[in-house]
Picture 1 (cartoon, rainbow, N blue to C red):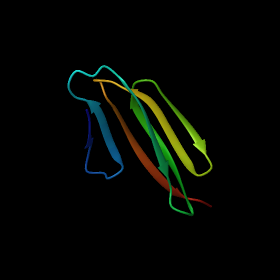
Picture 2 (spheres, rainbow, N blue to C red):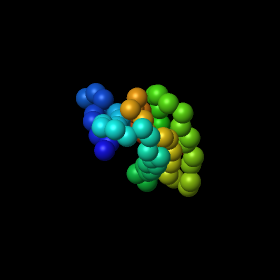
Picture 3 (cartoon, rainbow, N blue to C red):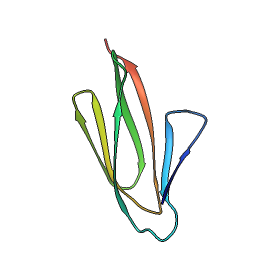
Picture 4 (cartoon, rainbow, N blue to C red):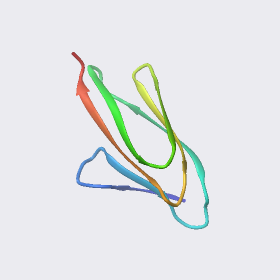
Length: 78
């Protein structure tokens, strides 16, 4: 079982980690921005891979007991 909890008062800041007897779970998350905006991710922790497909960022990682945290930010396109 995994748990997602806010890392701070920011709505775009997240920590994810495993509870129980799990060792690792392959995990993928997709992040899209509203029309007219671009999005970026700042990832902290273990190895990860980020790809961009059209307007969507895809974050892939192996979720472990050490967890992972990240912040998503938005910027208006020029």
